[in-house]
Image 1 (cartoon, rainbow, N blue to C red):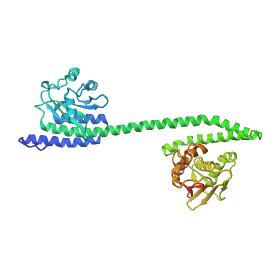
Image 2: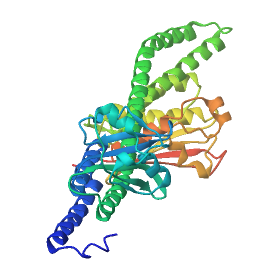
Image 3: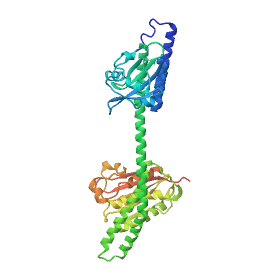
Image 4: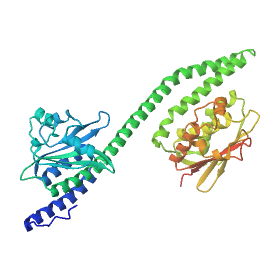
Length: 420
């Protein structure tokens, strides 16, 4: 592009052009490191004015919707006015550069019928000479850069070469900046949507908890005092209320799944205390569902350093999951394997079982094995996801085992023991 740099010119001129090439290279690095569109446009304009030694430079970008060029930036004091003025593709120099995808050098614009006088007349600016080149992304023209009014002499082929390089770098840099800006905007919108969703769930679960507590209390009394004839109806109300409370508990823990973090209030406790709390929490559900859970817990205390309420949620969710998918006559068992540095708690059932291919998927948010199972057993599909997140936050591990459908399932939780 700069092949004729030293042909028939003086040594000072060679030195000057060489300095400009060096400046152009340095500017390219600056453009590629700038991701803010406004700052990027200003850098492009300042560079072009300096290197081309002209009075003004403007950038026009193609408006896909309106099918016209619009001023995106200009060094002129009239840039605010320019931004409001559309430039047609027909009967304008910028339009010719854009549509024909080639540069133009017009050292006397008043003699060129393609010169679009309306812009100059509206802002009170006279264009005497113009150099314009297309801005391209690969084979697609995205806009035009125009250098106006050469300060000394006429625009040269060397000026054309420099502006073509600036335009190429500018098009790529602006495209990258726009992509980054779009991504940032999308992230902000997603973040706002997530916050709104979390706030809505938090408010809903909080506001519903009190009236639901009253309903559960009345339903329990109704169940206890019901006659044999009304017992099934009272039991149905109690079961429905209990399931709704489980849904609210899952919603209240949803923030764990969105943020991947939680404020853990770690305290010294024992595994026995965790299981005792979980056992008490599910006792009501166990009774109304007519299930039996066999707790096989060692008498010797197993020390843990955990957030007791949150770890209780883990085992409550695992026990409720077993109850949900296990027929009344089948077995549910919680066992403990005390190791040197860790403890393994297993919740096993002889219920429906899990397809081998879905042993990992069941921990995903809102996962339901299939639609008819969702309708039959209910739930949001959050319990196991919440359990996994809480176990991971405590530095533990959790997984599921099953030989297949109809062969039951076992969920194992491994937690580090408190070091002496």
